[in-house]
Length: 90
Image (cartoon, rainbow, N blue to C red; front, side):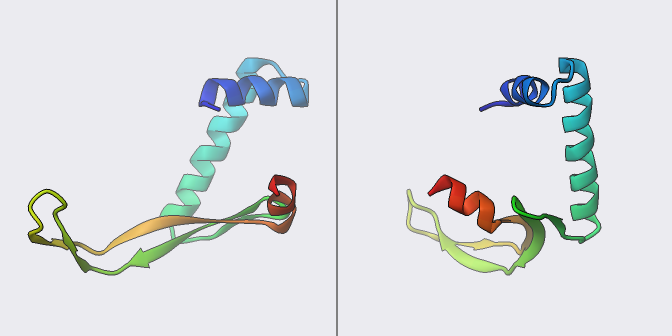
Protein backbone atom coordinates (compact mmCIF):
# COMPACT_ATOMS: atom_id res chain seq x y z
CA UNK A 1 0.00 0.00 0.00
CA UNK A 2 1.43 3.38 -0.95
CA UNK A 3 0.64 6.78 0.56
CA UNK A 4 -2.19 7.58 -1.88
CA UNK A 5 -3.85 4.23 -1.21
CA UNK A 6 -3.47 4.76 2.54
CA UNK A 7 -5.12 8.19 2.26
CA UNK A 8 -8.02 6.64 0.32
CA UNK A 9 -8.42 3.91 2.96
CA UNK A 10 -8.31 6.40 5.85
CA UNK A 11 -10.87 8.61 4.12
CA UNK A 12 -13.23 5.67 3.59
CA UNK A 13 -12.78 4.21 7.10
CA UNK A 14 -13.14 7.50 8.98
CA UNK A 15 -15.76 9.02 6.66
CA UNK A 16 -13.47 11.97 5.81
CA UNK A 17 -12.67 13.72 2.58
CA UNK A 18 -9.43 12.71 0.92
CA UNK A 19 -8.05 16.19 1.64
CA UNK A 20 -8.82 15.85 5.36
CA UNK A 21 -7.33 12.35 5.44
CA UNK A 22 -4.16 13.61 3.70
CA UNK A 23 -3.81 16.46 6.22
CA UNK A 24 -4.29 14.03 9.11
CA UNK A 25 -1.72 11.59 7.75
CA UNK A 26 0.79 14.38 7.01
CA UNK A 27 0.29 15.73 10.54
CA UNK A 28 0.89 12.27 12.01
CA UNK A 29 4.07 11.80 9.98
CA UNK A 30 5.35 15.28 10.83
CA UNK A 31 4.62 14.96 14.54
CA UNK A 32 6.13 11.48 14.77
CA UNK A 33 9.25 12.57 12.87
CA UNK A 34 9.69 15.58 15.16
CA UNK A 35 9.34 13.45 18.29
CA UNK A 36 11.85 10.87 17.01
CA UNK A 37 14.34 13.61 16.07
CA UNK A 38 14.21 14.79 19.70
CA UNK A 39 14.87 11.24 20.87
CA UNK A 40 11.35 10.65 22.19
CA UNK A 41 9.49 7.37 21.87
CA UNK A 42 6.08 7.31 20.13
CA UNK A 43 3.80 4.59 21.49
CA UNK A 44 0.37 3.75 20.10
CA UNK A 45 -1.28 1.25 22.42
CA UNK A 46 -2.35 -1.87 20.53
CA UNK A 47 -0.50 -0.82 17.36
CA UNK A 48 3.15 -0.48 18.32
CA UNK A 49 5.92 1.90 19.23
CA UNK A 50 8.55 3.84 17.32
CA UNK A 51 11.90 4.60 18.94
CA UNK A 52 15.40 5.68 17.98
CA UNK A 53 18.40 3.52 18.78
CA UNK A 54 22.10 4.02 18.27
CA UNK A 55 23.83 1.59 15.91
CA UNK A 56 27.55 1.39 16.63
CA UNK A 57 30.34 1.62 14.11
CA UNK A 58 31.36 -1.69 12.61
CA UNK A 59 33.47 -3.28 9.92
CA UNK A 60 31.77 -4.68 6.84
CA UNK A 61 32.83 -6.17 3.53
CA UNK A 62 32.33 -4.97 -0.02
CA UNK A 63 30.49 -7.92 -1.62
CA UNK A 64 32.11 -7.35 -5.02
CA UNK A 65 35.74 -7.09 -3.94
CA UNK A 66 35.73 -8.62 -0.47
CA UNK A 67 37.62 -5.59 0.84
CA UNK A 68 36.89 -4.49 4.40
CA UNK A 69 35.04 -1.19 4.79
CA UNK A 70 34.26 0.85 7.87
CA UNK A 71 30.57 1.52 8.49
CA UNK A 72 29.99 4.62 10.61
CA UNK A 73 27.79 4.74 13.69
CA UNK A 74 24.32 6.16 13.16
CA UNK A 75 20.88 6.48 14.67
CA UNK A 76 18.13 4.23 13.30
CA UNK A 77 14.37 4.16 13.77
CA UNK A 78 13.01 0.99 15.29
CA UNK A 79 9.37 -0.21 15.28
CA UNK A 80 8.05 -2.81 17.69
CA UNK A 81 4.59 -4.12 16.93
CA UNK A 82 2.04 -4.13 19.73
CA UNK A 83 0.31 -7.31 20.83
CA UNK A 84 -2.98 -6.52 19.09
CA UNK A 85 -1.25 -5.84 15.77
CA UNK A 86 0.93 -8.94 16.11
CA UNK A 87 -2.09 -11.11 16.88
CA UNK A 88 -4.08 -9.66 13.96
CA UNK A 89 -1.29 -10.44 11.48
CA UNK A 90 -0.79 -14.06 12.60
